[in-house]
Image 1: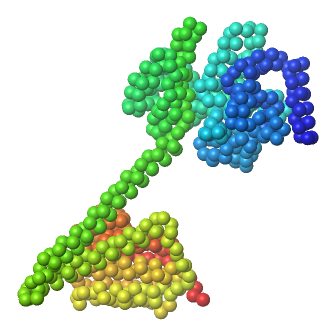
Image 2: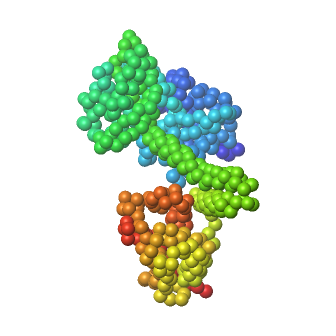
Image 3: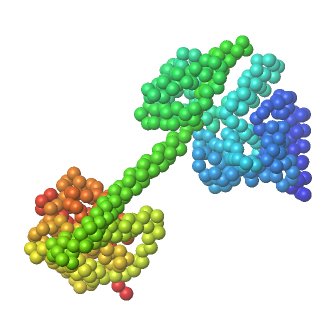
Length: 523
């Protein structure tokens, strides 16, 4: 109840002051309820007075702005992007944020019965000595219509010229504060550009005035401007669309643009007004989403190809084995042939299983579902175990397969299972591409790091392919085996555990993968 009385007293005092002493009161009352714009007087929270458009809008969404418990700030949605403000935005009352003018323009979102309404908002102090604000909620078209109405009032009433000019200036400031504004004549020559537009495109006022508006456009956008927008404007229509503009330094901006033809009393177009809102971030986000979708499509197409290859081999070899099955009892050649088909089917089935397991590992990593059990481990014992497990892959006695460690214990913090998988994948990769010479695993302590090197004397990697060997399905050569996913898994696991990964290689002389991980104590 005290709050209600306080609000009522404040409202009556304001009306009395305006009525008795303020020369702008007559104009204020004459236009207050005539405009379609939503205008209210407020202390930032409570509504002191509001025009019909303001109260009618809230009535349509089931809210009465004149009840004691109505707070304007509670109607604003906390939309945290594209210049929206709400109570507590940037840790300040919403109206203080708008008055500060840190952004070029602000908007508010208000939830209706079946949609979210978006308004450009302006806040102006009614009197510098009091914290009473004029709040205007409007879209660009409404605001411009109101501006035209005020200009008509200015021409029609010489007695109230000073008051009208003052009110008109407030709306000009509100438009300039919340939009990028420019005006040009019928030849496209710029006659006005506000500070927000100059700052965004990095021009000064002097560099723009007298120049053609087409200086902002690339060739494609210039054609759209001349053919589409200009045709609508010549017909006296308001044009809305998206323009791609370039700044002074060649920087690209995307603007949601409204172009309004300004007419005189005779209905003749005398000037063209353009109002822009920057949507560059939104357009770039859309482009990035499309690129991501394209990359995913390409990835799945590649997966389909990789899965189809071993599956076709399994089907074909199994079919050939079945065709020769009846002959294997009496014919030794047929038995060997069927055995060969089955061995090839088995090898392709193993390859397919490895591919599927690798894909599952990568999918889990990308979705963030991989759990890492980080704890203290002995890097030497983990690496030695992986080394010994890979000895079964050693098919050539001409390869010198060695393990070297400066200490028996080198403590590190890692997921032991995934650390072993990294070492296993690197050793397996080295053995695949080494015919003779050596494959060597070395562990050392350097400063505060444990350094693991897996080096081979194999075929090496061409310099032009070094940059993408860790990408999925990357194959240095068409060697006919492997999934092309092993090194990708190595990189993903290493990054997740904070392990530095480096590669040096020379075609025909071998490769060396180096892992560096911070030392950690074993308890």
